[in-house]
Each structure stands twice: as structure tokens, then as C-alpha cells.
Image (cartoon, rainbow, N blue to C red; front, side, top):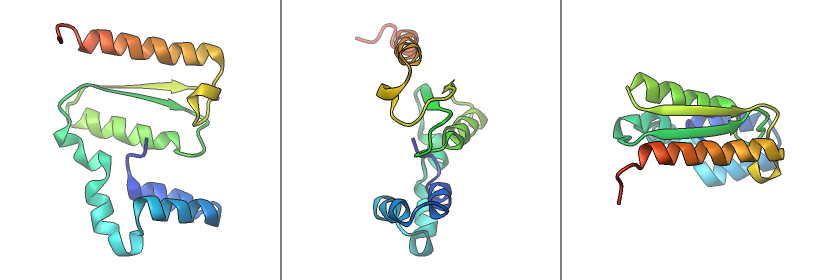
Length: 122
């Protein structure tokens, strides 16, 4: 997912005008809302995270670049939070279009993460 709203908009600004307009409508205009976008970016909210986080990202994702997950992982680690980033080489944004082996890995990683962190949860 998107962890830094202004970085996402900077990335999209260099692409197609249609994509940039979509993100402006979805996220907001950085020219008028920069401070709000900075303050509400997920990577700026890690102090509020009180559960382990599993990030999974296709390295070939052109919709949300992997550096978004890398930023989130770094911020969480620096804040002393439990985080795991699983990368999928050659995979894009839509996980159900991934190679079968990578989809299975995604499911296994999810199952393992939940089994580890939900023990004893009713």
C-alpha cells in the first residue's frame, strides 16, 4: 500500500496525466494540502501501530512502487515495531495475476504470520 502520500503524488506526477488526476482526486492536492498529506501519511503514523505488520509487495508493481513498502518497513523498524516485508520478484500490483508459486507463497506467508501472532486469541 501507499505509505507516503506526497511521495506517491511525486511519482505519479511524472506519469500519465490521467493517473495523476486520479491520485489527486483520491489523495488530495499537494499544493494546497501538503502539511495534511505529510501528517496523515501512514509512515508518519507508526507510533500508533501496536500490532505486528506484514507487508507483501511485488517488485515489479508499477501502481504502487515497492519503495512505498520499503519506507514503511524502515519507519516501523526505527520505531521498534514488529514488521516483515516479503518481496515478490517480477510480480506486479494485482496479486491474483501473479505466478501460481508466488500466490501460494503469499498465502503461506499470511497463514504463518497469523498463526504466529494470533496464538491464544479467542
